Length: 321
Length: 140
Image (cartoon, rainbow over all chains, first blue to last red; front, side, top):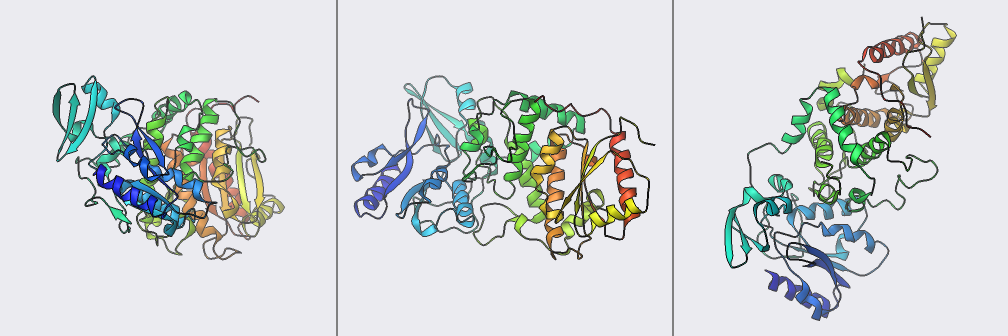
């Protein structure tokens, strides 16, 4: 698959069809890949692919807004949803992006991998297992033991035209739990326990803004958190300021979050952000029957309305009188 | 009837219906808890959810958004957007432990002065009844 990808990219670059290509390259050690930008045909050997390519490369498309040329990138099925959203939000023009779909066998959770093995050199997906190479030995491990949490609710766009595909693009199906189980678990707690839970999470936040910066959906030219007039947020990291930050961010994820899980992966203090954004995703789904990134034609939930909203009326007695 | 530990409530009232309703409550000399602060907005849809989040996070005890009844919006459809947002925002706030009583959306027309007074009384009571006061606002 890697070889096939390199050939496509080489051709695109040599024909001058794209200015550069965004892909994955080997990182500083075997378990870390890194995003890379390929500008010349002879660089394509750097491109790699494995279950250790978590980055949502659509994040880098924000930068092409002001250019004129075309850009190529490789996407997993889940990341294709980001492209759908960026097109919908007029952030990119679909015809200026050459999308190479890569069939993903599921992504490995590094923490789970490091718990199970030491000195891993490579991981490869094969059927229902991951082949984990440690020294001379190759261990075959059931996928469910190593998958990233988000891969249990793998979802691709309903309709999306890839420019190239390196195999059949179909979502993974693993796990029997509802994708919102972790949200529902919190919902069952009394309100004060939930408050204590999130307070303890937000207290740790150092407001490095990594969750915002890694987010494909955070493309505002001036971020609300950086606005000086009005100033929405103090720079201090008190629990309340942190709560304001996370709530506003969660609000901005309405109809945008595709659960790529990058925010949670990059958080240096381990805040379970998916439990926050998944809640938003759940309500948007149940109230407005909407999911981000599925189809370019879908209208985002908050830019539209119906005079009669049956899904809302069941909860209305709680919200309006 | 008012006491110092009455909760402070921020009220966003739409210019065309609810603010007139609040005004009517005032000129009718209806009694209600005095600890509410009314902010006039041109439409309930003008209230960015960030306003609500910021107010609650900074220590206000409750936020109420008042708009025209569905179908009566001066701008035809503003309150329909408000309705969607409010429901979603309420769910989000509840998820992180902010009680649903602290953020409410009500429809009040220009003729409903009594409903305004009653709404404020009711919500003040509901918030007062909640266990434990919120944390004080951050310093500075």
